[in-house]
Length: 273
Image 1: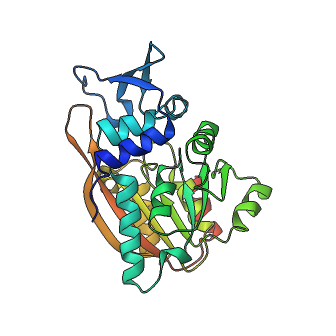
Image 2: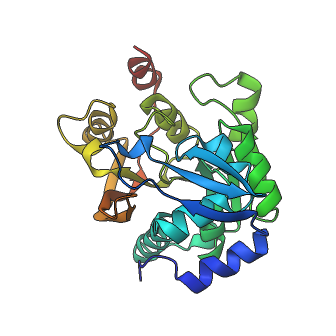
């Protein structure tokens, strides 16, 4: 049930996007670079461009590049994996995904929103800090989001927060966006604060960010959220997120949980220190 998107499916989606990518070339060796330093050369319009995977503004500006790179070459399955896992757990607990009003944080170009629609979610609001992400989502998937906000959740203006709260979201989803500086723990906690209580959340993290020696703060935050009763973890699964440029598997942990109580100021303020 939780398999990667098939080559046929992602190729069909790529054709719908009208990809401008002519070729992708990977380095002969990885030179020991970490996951967030991986890069490739992309041929677009006969021109070669070197793009670092985590330079999302550069990636999103090229139609089809994100899909070609991550779904095609690197076999990333996380958008479909997390959506299907959320669907399975929600159904197991006697609820339906068509009742979810999702806040998709780190929404990128809409691949996760696309998968949420596929499992029956009818209300999705996207949030990303990068304006190029919204532009890509509007360009490639104009019918996925009810609304798409460009916002920094660590410094959210009152008017922007009110707009998000009026959506009455009861589910937080964030996929492949935590732990590498894209969404810090404070932003994740603020996103959790923006959904109703009780509510649902589904997210994933590189497995090393959930270990005791983690330096990002996510391991401590997730343990604290569970220990102090903000959330209850219902499902915790290790799986292959994608492969690295070397072909080695990159393992993540998928989490589905329920929000049990409101996030208070004390928690948010402790993450600002």
